Length: 426
Image 1 (cartoon, rainbow, N blue to C red):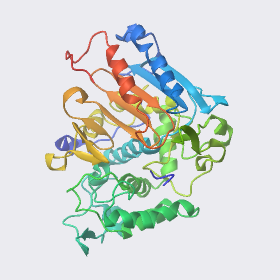
Image 2 (tube, rainbow, N blue to C red):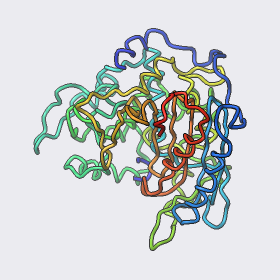
Image 3 (spheres, rainbow, N blue to C red):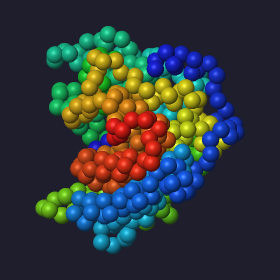
Image 4 (cartoon, helix red, strand yellow):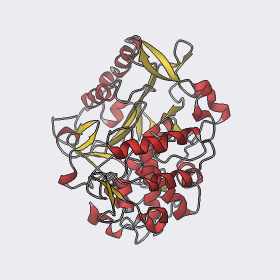
């Protein structure tokens, strides 16, 4: 579908909410600097460019942007290849469809409302969206009431019992595909109407009993609308993007920026072909409904501001969106052992899920949190080392080109001294 695609710590989160516009001078703004200023080797980081050029020369994808920052200092930011294959060279702040990298933004929006007391994590979803009050569970061919209500926490953790349809082959997944695929052709359907369709479908499992990647964040986007009294688009723009100085991130690409949007490629017959050409992409027109699960387009510089806000535990350049303890809870595993390992196609070892992010739990990935978009945009944040890093392209299917492991190896190889004091780096 083209457009779909520390519990105790939270006890005090809603007690007092920060003023999102209040000055907070504890953290520096994002700056550009030399790698050695922040303890990274310029010589090693220089290996990123040739590595990405090799991927492009092998015909694996059309264009790549990589970005590395440490302690808010951008030490590497390069573009390689093409925006439109063989025609328009890629520039490092061009526009990408970030798909599921929208989910962290929606999760931040929801947690802002939790801090303000307008939502509660363990609040039944049916209290906010009454259409979910009587949802049923599909159980061995029969429908029955769930053992408990879906909560806001479940939506954030993907433990709601909802699904997507595209990642499984259960009867419920097939019901989702049948019901939701026509929605992309329905230009008049709103987010509220789309969520109403989801509520009519049965749950795959009882809430809290299964981690399942799903429409949960799209439903959460509707929760944000109802709780705030604003459209999701307006909430993102006025409460998150404008305060952080994010200018080119939206649910569609502005007319004057159409030339900055990349084509999306896949491989057929041994060559790259465009499967979503920028010139007629649906992302160049306003959508009928705002997908909090996968609807945004963005640029590397914009998403860096959002990611650095998270790395700074809720604050950027004097503007605080979330309390530090809220961000720590969001980026700490919230799943008990019975729900692990998470599975998305296959198992995701050594990881749990926070509230909006995959979270490394052990070994070299411990404490690192991250997520990705289906067209192979990915970001990760290492709060111990102070690193924010991106590897972005526009290629389908998800995982069809491996940029992140290459970038990760070079970045950690560039550390002049690890703050972990542990040689076992990712």
